[in-house]
Length: 310
Image (cartoon, rainbow, N blue to C red; front, side, top):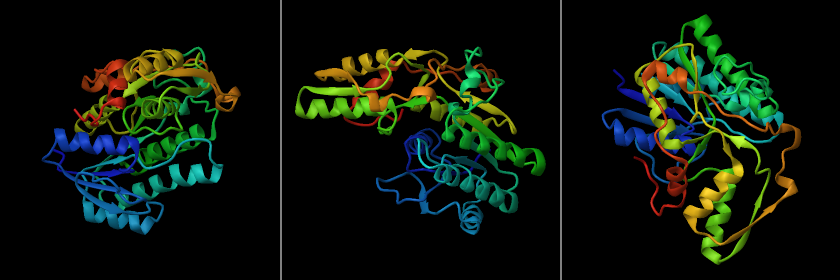
C-alpha cells in the first residue's frame, strides 16, 4: 500500500498535473513535492524547495519524506548546452537514487525518460515499442538515455525498485512554448486577446504521438500502484498525428482568427525525425492502462478558462 509519495520537478508541466491528479484521485496519500525553484501557484501536499543535485540535501529530503514511491520528474529539455542538460537530467537522479539507497531502499522510483531516447532507432520500428534500439539525435535525448541507464544500474546492482517511463509528446494546459503545441497555443491565445494574427510554425508535415497529460498522470499512478522494477514503459497514444492536423484542431477549438506562416528558425533540420509514434501495449498488458482522451479533448483543455484535472 502506498502511503507516502515524493514528487520531484513538481512545478513543471507534468509535475503540476500529476500532483493535482494525485490529490484528486488518491487524497489519502501523504504527498511531498519538491523543485529547485519556488512553487509559485499552490501545489497539493507539502512543498520543499531543494536543489537535488546536492546529494546531502537530497538524502535529507528523502529521510524526512520517508516515501513509499518517488516520481522523479525533475530535469530540463530543449537545445541547451550539453553541460546544462547533463547537470539537470542526470545529477539530481543520481543524488535521489543514492538517497534512496541509504534512506529508503524499499521505495519504488519512477523516473521520466523521453521518446527522444529512441531517435533514429525508430526508423523501420514503427510503432515504437520498448525493444526499439536507442539512437538519440539530440543531446537532450542522449542525456535522458544516460539517466535511464543510471536508473537501471541502480536496480541491477543495488536492487532498487526503479522504473522508467518514456513520454512521447504530452498535451495539456500550461505546456512550454518551447514545444510546438505549446507555441501554437501561446500564439492562438494571443490572437484571441488582440485580434487576427500570424501563427509562425516549423515543419507541419512531421508526425508525432500526442498523449493527454491527464492520461499520462493516470498511467504513472497505475505504475506506482502496480510496480515492475527494472522495466521501461512508453507513455503514448499509439497513433501518429500530423503537426498541421493538430494545429488545425487547435484553431478550430480556439476559434482564433489567424494566418499560418512557416518560420525557417523553427525548422529542426537533421534533428527532425519525420514520423514517430509509439506502442502502449506493454503498459496495457502490465496494468490495463490505455489512453482515454481524444486530441479534441486535449485541445479544449488548453483553451478552457479553468484547468481540467479530472
